[in-house]
Amino acid sequence: MIEFENVGHSYDSRAVLSDVDLRLTEQRVAFVGGNGSGKSTLARTINGLVHPTSGSVRVDGVDPVRHGRRVRSRVGFVFTHPDSQIVLPTAGEDVAFSLRGKGLSKQERQRRAAEVLAEHGLGDYADHPAHRLSGGQKQLLALCSMLALEPDVLVCDEPTTLLDLRNKRHFVRVLEQLPQQVVLVTHDLDLLDGFDRVVVLDAGRVVADDEPRVALRRYRELVDA
Image (cartoon, rainbow, N blue to C red):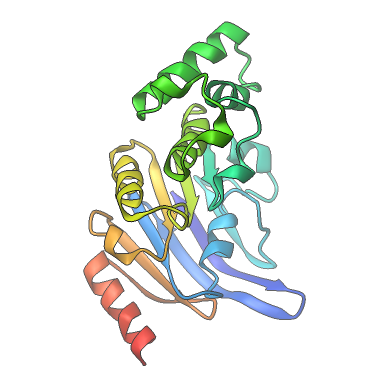
């Protein structure tokens, strides 16, 4: 369960989040809103990448600000640009590197990396140069590096922005099949039919919070106003 209690955040004197109160228990939750609405900032408070300037966040009762390492061991984060997360030359090495803090031997890390890559269609690319993968493959690789850690929650911040429609749909299908709770920040509204809940943000505030059809209708009304 992810809880936001009266969460606010400001950059200098500019408020980007105000009075956000949410309790997320559903398995598939999306944050949507226009540019500057605060959705990415809100998502980043979940694992302590952003610290609220007011209010608090809890992940199963644990504060990411006070216990960041503990929360990040349970919350994986996938960024918009996979190149910012890929650090080693080959796909297999990169996933194995994410396991360096798990107390596993080198052979165990390599085995686990191979398993995760195979589960998500990259089994033949373990020895492939990571920088030569396609955009969709790179995003899957970034996801695999997080899934290898077996987190309870996966936060994805606009991960489909750089992908074509086929790869966008594939990536979201992968998210829909994961056992983890998923929080997705996205502009791709047509990918959210399978989600349980959509939270709409505008000017840093929650303006709609419902199942996708109802929440997205409200969002489109805001856009058209």
